[in-house]
Image 1 (spheres, rainbow, N blue to C red):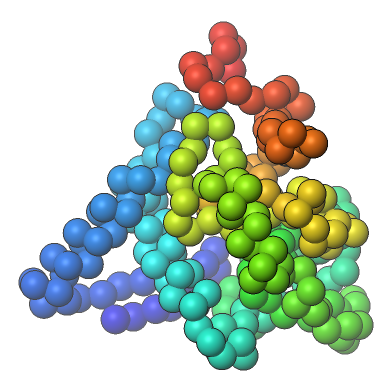
Image 2: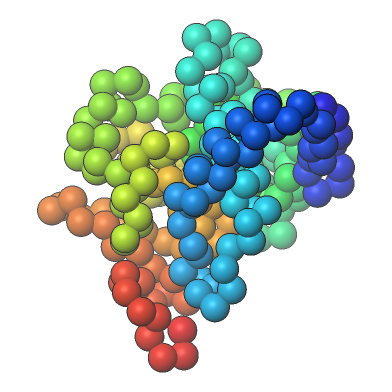
Length: 226
């Protein structure tokens, strides 16, 4: 198996015996079938190749999350303070030992990953080492999963591979409290951080989603004109 860093990400190439390849293909295919379609692009089905890639990431994410050794399971991201703070035109971040990632991707990782962020100045000198306080405690996660049950995007019932998302981003002063957390699957988490969507949690535990335009999203057929 070859795993090669490239400019936009990683390139994965593998050759397996027929029986092992069939196992991998079946597992990824079953997971890929459950990945939701993007509400932004109803007329263009999510490509099968992209679904299988997302399925592979889900499997690997679950394995890392279960690792009892925090050091082995920590992803180190080098980022400038303005990048994590959402300042317009902020520079990209970089995964240690890996490729450059967009500011929005770094912000999403800082929201839900077991992550150590090295905040740097313009000369790449560390200003501070990120703390893991953004990660909810085990008890808080149990309460969150009991309250939300599954991904809170309208119409999405995914229970596995879900993340605790900070409604007010942790990097922007948001608290790791239940009233600032909501359960989302990885696909809809990217919709917020990379897609520009927004959500709000109300006192009755209802969650409202808003498109990048500010228009509230409701499950069902898209309104005329999108």
